[in-house]
Amino acid sequence: MKTAEALVKIMVKEGVRDAFGIPGAGINAVYQYLADAPIKHYCMRHEEACAHAADAYYRASHRIALAICTAGPGATNFVTGLYTASIDSIPFLAVTGQANTWQLQMEPFQCVDIAKICESVAKKTYRLMDGNDLPKIMQEAFYLMRSGRPGPVLLDMPLDVQQQEIEFDIDAYEPKPIENILPSKEKIDIALDMLAQAQKPIMIVGGGVVLAECEQEAVRLAEAMQMPVITTYMAKGAIPCDHPLNAGHVGIQVGQPIGNRYFLDSDLVLAIGCRFSDRHTGDLKVYRGERKFIHIDIAPEQIGRVFEPDLGIVSDARTAIEALLKGVTMRKLGNTQPQRIQSLSNERILLARRTNYDAVPIMPHRLFQEINAAFDTDAMFTTGCGITQIWSGQLQNVGKTRHYLPSGGAGTLGYEIPAAFGAKVAFPERTCVAVVGDFGFTFLGEELAVASVNDKPIIVVILNNAYLGLIRQNQKTAYGYEYAVDMPYNQDGRIDYVKVAQGYGCKAERVFTPEELADALKRAKQAACCYVIDAVCNQTQLCDMGGNLAAIKSWAPDD
Image 1 (tube, one colour):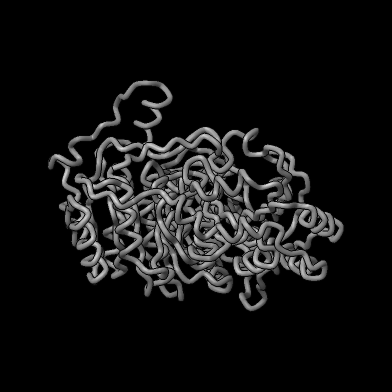
Image 2 (cartoon, rainbow, N blue to C red):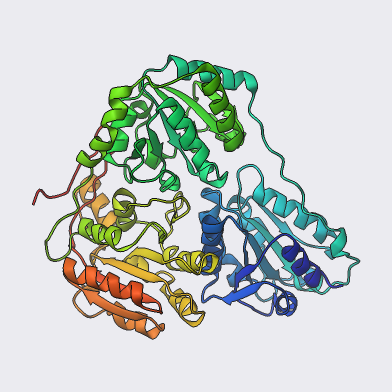
């Protein structure tokens, strides 16, 4: 059979059921076999959106999807999507078309070395030069996507190789099994000793816990030890909002007062599946303080990458948590901080940021209060970058894991809407909401057309503050000036997002008051189509943040 047909058969056997792509001359030999495969293809409107949709599809479902496009500029448009997924440890398969092998050194039309370009933003890249190598490469590619720290893989396919006749039997192809990375027993014992000696231990649940699907096990370990649970931004929703051990987020931007306080008051940090990113830690001297750290991660290179922990354990999150829970039970370790635990639920309420502003234009805080009130715990949310994303991380209540799907490490504007579509494809029965700023809406907003024509209704809430809000805040607070960040036309009628949305097959409306916003959200939920709400918000409101966890400045007004 032809290499292109073998590729499709292998993807089906590896479990790929959905594809996000744009056909073109450089990849049409593969599309010929996609047409009859049990893989549903969605024709996107921009190649970057193909990657974001496949990315969020996995974040929601933990199933690998295909992003596929043609050569040249189509392929280079994948770069941002691959980076967005890679930094957040999200796997998907990216397939790009390419010129014929005999043309590669001749600078033919739409020929670029995309495998070389993407080496730093994918877990691995391949250029297939002989179709007979495809089975081995695909077996390795799917293994790499799923094993260790997950991530996307790119396969670049020259056109003549796509059409090459090869000997291949799909029945002889078997996916490569994923081995379980077990923790060192000696290190688990040391970790238990450290937990036994601590007076105020806390647990940090990172995105690796979500990827390992062991959120409930992590909570059980925390319950056994009576430790407060702090989530990183990538693990938002991993513990129910009202759980008595939920101590919120830690961070200098999306962190919450409750999380920062409980973290700073700890003497031991059990961190599982997190990277200690700079927006989480802030100033490392303050973050590290006098407390001790146990860092558990599946990727050896993550241990000590930012700072050396007192104990590093390379392990799959689930097996490490299970080993610790077994040890805690055997040693009968228990609550060393009863007063802290007893007051946690009340402190969470007392320290919560205020959201009940009645002002017009709408305060951003109030926008998220209305979002929290409008949607139940089954709703999924996506968000991309900027001040809107920070408010979302600080203020949104998400009660279930894999229901908050942000661009974390990359902070990618344009991720929001195609990601919402990808999540909706994964779970058509769930409500999916993209929360986006007015500037971010103009990045890949055309993907609303894809959701509309495929009857996958998503809701888009635009926080329209007519500014590049986060950039303005940085200019004013760090440098004392403001330039090139105001966009008054986004509110004064010259730019009409309602008409834009309607042009893409959506229902849409603009709202000016909290009451109008609440009513619009009700209509959006009841609509059987895509719905866009353009919420006119306070233009100059700044967002709480700081350089270290002990010095977060609040900009919220008192009245």
